[in-house]
Each structure stands twice: as C-alpha cells, then as structure tokens.
Length: 167
Image (cartoon, rainbow, N blue to C red; front, top):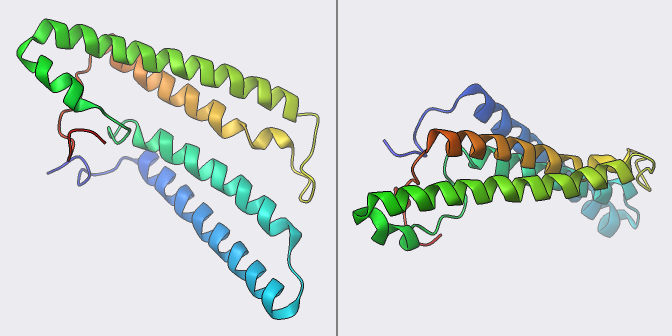
C-alpha cells in the first residue's frame, strides 16, 4: 500500500472536503459570472472576489494537508547517495527539518503582519475583513511548523518512497 492509498484521518478528510467545497463554489461562481457576462451583458462583481478568497484558502489548506503525507517537493536524488552514510543522512535530515521550521517562522511572521494590517480594512465588493486573505498563510505556516518541529525532535527520516527522484 502506497502512502497515497493509506487511509486518511479525520483532519485529512476534513481538509479534502473543504478544498472540494471551495473548488465547487469557485467553479460555480465563475461559470455563472461568465454566462451572465456573455449571455446577458451583466455579471456578479462579487464572483471574482469570492473566487480569489476561496482559491487562497484552498491552496493553503492543500499545502497543510500535503505535508504529513510527504507530498511536498522532495529532492530525494540529492539525499539518496547519503543512504550509505547513515550519520550524514541523519544530520542532513535534521538540518532539513530545522530549515522547514525556520521557513515557517518567517512565513508566519510575514503573514501575521499582513493579518494585522488587514484587520482595519474591508474587501471592496463583499466587505469581508482583508485579514482573511493572509490568514490561511499564517495558519498553514503554524501547522507545518509544528509538524516539522515534531519531525525534527523525533528525528523522522526523509521518505525516499517518491515516484521520481526529483519532484
């Protein structure tokens, strides 16, 4: 059984349902807007803003859900030669996990600053707080950062079970 066939836990199923719902709403909103614009000469202004918001949330939900499954970009061809040198591989694996944690701190800090800036402004058409656009980046960075920190502390090895050497 491959990692893709493995049974999903509740959080993964919830993330997949949220992404599917966001995609369905985006597709419907864009389709209706296209039909109205080209068929009737009018459109729904909120369609574009809603689609943009849902797309941002869908991307970051997907990134968060992909991390524990090992579906992010992995340059295993760079690490594979080190399989014969377990100590070097172990050290490099910890460095990689530490870099992921550090990157998540940077992304989270930048997203937090954008959330704070967006709390005082509203979107043009729908009027939702502009903080809702950078919020998923903050949540994603926090979630992946925690998962990577756990991997770092536990010394979780890099998964070499990828379909190709460089993804």
